Length: 355
Image (cartoon, rainbow, N blue to C red):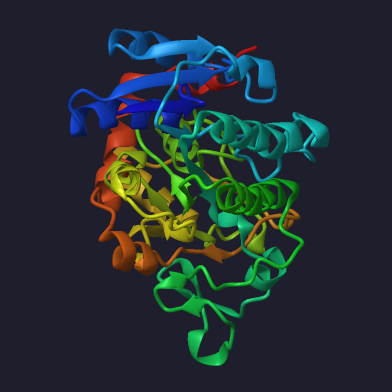
């Protein structure tokens, strides 16, 4: 089996490339990346050592896909993954749409011509911003939690947000571009009869991620705390009680392999994330860091940003029922892995902001 991974020099793409070959002997990995992310050159060298065949190209340019070798599946891990993308000034709104939507359409056109399957890594941020922000919250042990007994909201369960939760706009330009891409995946797969699966990922985290405040938050927070760099709780009273769950991308490999081995054309959508056992607030993460690294002051700013939510944990029970999938790497293992990497790589954050 041959697999093309787009965005292969990013954290998710490079992790999947290494893990897929460990789990499936003889699998051929082809990688495509535009090398625009600071630090991606480091992953490029590692991938070459692993025998990955790399192509420098951009999924926004259809001609860059024409010279790629034939493959059985495409794993689309190329995206601008920041909820602030298109509005923060670092990326224009047009660039965001070209990356996250037009790029996906170009890949789907390639699948149509080449008769290969498509696996999309989507995001939890396709769920309604207003519905999430409007959930009634209470604080428990330094973390927000919805008042489940007082809330009637389709798709909201004590185990997290299911695939039935509202995707009503507004979402953010990032979330909207990914939701539109999900729709195009389903339509192309149905119209042109090729297998395709959409996996809505929670926050991906692990050692080697180039974290920034608006993406890779677990890596950014732990690296910043370890090296006593400025940190700030923003919004929601400046308490740091907003909660997300995380997932190590290597835990996606078992799911992706089952989807690639499937003989059916189930073009459905599943959540894939850590769930409640992998949920943690920034305040709780700070306490974890304090036990590991010692005390460090974190400042507060009680100004809510437009796309932040107080709580977002995904319920991945559907992936468990359909694919017998569940996360393997525990929250503690993920945090400890990042912390060790931070201790060994004191200049890692600077690599994320070069250029």
